[in-house]
Image (cartoon, rainbow, N blue to C red; front, side, top):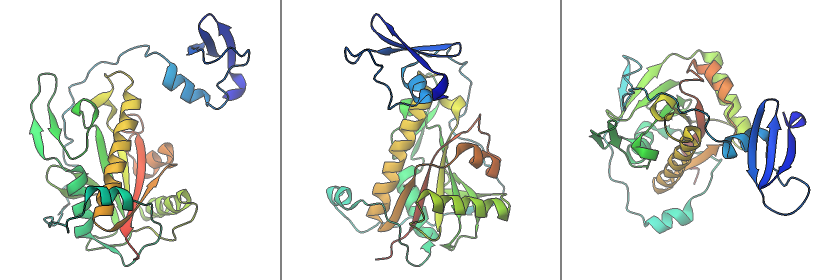
Length: 276
């Protein structure tokens, strides 16, 4: 795509042109060379382009209906040992080495403290909820899926997290696709891990947020906030967290059958027991 793009100087900056699409970029210096070589064309369009049309606001419920009739209630959370918030910030690390398989109650505590629905809210524009992490306009468009490969008390499989009931909903996923997802997660860490215990995948229901200004930016922002909440909660619980930065959204949709247009993948996150 970069080979087809053209920059031309305009009065107040630069204009990027790609076929019939053009985006005006701000001036950053007086050089005759466009200072945007470090940017990819899609990022320039996404960051500087003006929304051409605000999509129709759909009446989308704040929570999705259960995705399965097979549900696994997560254990009631216990109170973890108290630890200073600033100690959690200081101790937060990406960890690649696991110990024994992580337990289902530990995964349950992670999701309870980081992502559960605490309260349902009725609003003038739309109904929403209150959760441990913030969300743009309290839309809470993010969904969490769980790939369980080695978890004590949780059968190997692929699940959706029901944040209101605090349950796992079992979804169908062939063994071949599950193994491809495991292999891909290991590659995403540059093979610094040799196994997967739990992989969390975060998607965004775009109809829940797409009428806002720059909805994809907001969805990525919300996913980043949720990742940090996972990191800090995992650190407080003594677990081993690792965000995945390069999971292919198209492949994820092909592997799982989750619609890439309705619910694109935002990010992935590995969690396991700490080796120490």
